[in-house]
Every structure is written in C-alpha cells, then in structure tokens.
Length: 446
Image (cartoon, rainbow, N blue to C red; front, side, top):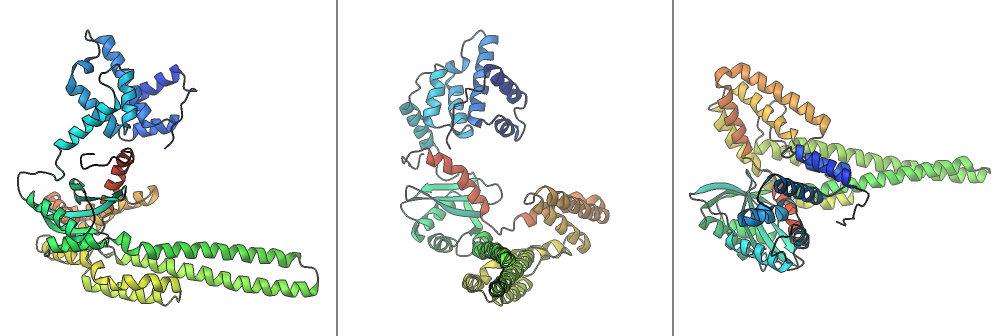
C-alpha cells in the first residue's frame, strides 16, 4: 500500500484525532473507524497515540522518558509496533529516532526480532496430551513453502515451519512433530494438496480427513459467474438488435434486422434460462450441505449422498460443456464431501440419548441460526438472530432448569463438526503482510 504525507492535517486536527483515539482505546473497531474517517493509516494513528502518551508522561512525571529507562517497556513497544501497528523495520527505526531512543538502527531492530524469533519454538508446547482438529495449509514465500497447522476451535497456530518442499514426507514430519509435542489429531480439514493429504493420511491413518467445501465447489460457482456475464452480454446484444430494427427504413432492411433480433432474443432467453437454472440448483446444493434439516434433524450420510446425487444429475442435464467438465471431479469426491455427516450422525445419536428429542431439535435449529449470524449481512443477520432466540425460547420452555446445561452440551458438540479450512486461510492472510515486509530475507525465525 502506498502512503502519502498529509500536510492538510494541521496541528489542531491531529490533536482532535488523538483525543478521539485516546477516549476510545479498547473499543472494538473504533481505531479503524477513526482512521477511515480521517483517511489516515492505523499506523499513523498509533504513532500519534504513542507520542501523546510520552508527552503526557513527561509532563506529569519527574522522570523523563520512562520507557527509555525500562528495557522491558521498550521491548513491549517494539513488539506492539511490529505486530499490532504492522510497522516495517524502517518505520520503527524512524519512530525510535524521533523519540531519541538508542540504539535505533534497522540492523539492530533486525537482530532484535531475529533473536526473539529464535526463542520461540516452531511448534506450540503444552504440558499434557490434547486432542485437536487440524486445519492445515501452505503459504508460499519466495518460492519456498511455509507449512501451517492451526487448531480449528481456537485458531491457535500449533506448528509453522519454513520447508524445502511440500512433499508427503515433509508433511508427515510436520504432523509427527505435533504428536511429539502431545497434540493428537481428531481429524483435519484442508484443500486437496497432494503432499498435504498424503502426508497426513500416513502420519494419522485412523483420523478423519475433511475436504474443504470452498475448494470443492469453487469452480462450479465460478461457472455460474461466467454464465451470468454471458447472460448480460446476450441481453446487451438483444437490446442492440432492437435499436437497429427500430432504425431500419427499407422493407429489406426491416426483414434483415427482424431476423437478427429474433436470433438475438432466442440466444438471450437461452443464456438467461441456463443461468437461472444453475443458480436455483446451486442454491439447493447449499441447502443440501447444511448440517440439519429445516425441522432440526441432523442429516445422515445416506440422505445427503442421495440429495447430492440427484442435484448433480439435474446440473449435468443442463447440457453445458463447462458445467459437465467442472462437475466430473466433484462427483468423484462425493465420499469425501459427506464425511462431516458421519460426525453429525454420531453426535445426533449421543445427544438424543441425553436430551429430549423435541428439545434437541429446537437446540439444533438454534445452533444452526447462531452459526449463520456471523456469516450473514445486516438484514439476514437480524433474521437469524430472531430465529435463534425463538428456538432457544422453545427449548427453554421444555427443559426448564436443565436448559443452560443441555444448551451448552448441544452447542459444544455441534461446534466440533468441521467442514471447511477457511480459518487457516484467514491466518495466512494475517501472516502475509509480515512476509511481504521481510524483503526476501525469510527464515524460520522471521
């Protein structure tokens, strides 16, 4: 991102910005709102806050530049600027020079962060054995893969390492290191990277592997976008043909333009119909992949397999070469797609042995809508919140004093079902800016 100097922000405006930031420290999202409002970077905002803090501390304290006298606080400042402020080493050096801290060279900062990285293990250390569900992926930096595995529940990075390649043997060693550090796998969700999947299945042969739904169906939804663009192009051609027909004068030209318009209209109707049919079927596909039915029953493997097979047949019947080509590998992966519903079946049996059946259905529906709240825009979010609260009220009416305990049980069990590895993609996006600022000097410590 390119940053520009802002001479239009005079001293009074900067003071006002600092006042707002100071008053709203700790309020989630407020710093981003202030930065967007004044069209400044959050890095500048944190720099202004830091300078204000130091000036006030100097004003009200007998000790000048307390941070400079306390190396612990200086270390904290460096980590905050690097990790929270996302400052480059050059920017941090400039800040330290402005604050008259020594040493403040880029070389010193590089060595400081390198030494800090050396003290951190690449694999998380825990005191006792723990079962976790892995989300794993690869990031590429200067053609070298970085292997990342996180916990699906907490998004804690369990293991991150710079590797020479992404072969099955390298991934097997990656998962073996996790086991040596007392992490044991309940399963893993990932894309279909050959080395990743083969390495995991070799290292954890008894655990589940879940195919990431985003990667499985992305190409099919991309075909939908292509058909949408073609439909709009056909609409444009039909409109153009209609205008040409309206401008025709002679009888021969009228007949010619009318034939062109009829052809364009026919092509347009076909393009719109193909797009509409695929859009409806993909909507039904989304519904078929939901963990529960509209009645609150957790779906079974056989029911989902049957629905998917029927939908795949209907999609194939649209007679579009791009759809047929894209659908073929998805059909072959249907056994992998239904794996999460094996978990759902086992959980349903366990819950119905403890929770009354009607109340269990209500709680499953409440969990389902609660799960959708974070994935929806403003209007659908309010709708899902109302649905969640309604079904919770229904369950509470049936369960009475046991409601809180059984609700926590149902929600906790359902949260263990993993169908996507998108959270590890989020972690990758958070790591990418730091990798980009390394200017090619990427090591395990960095």
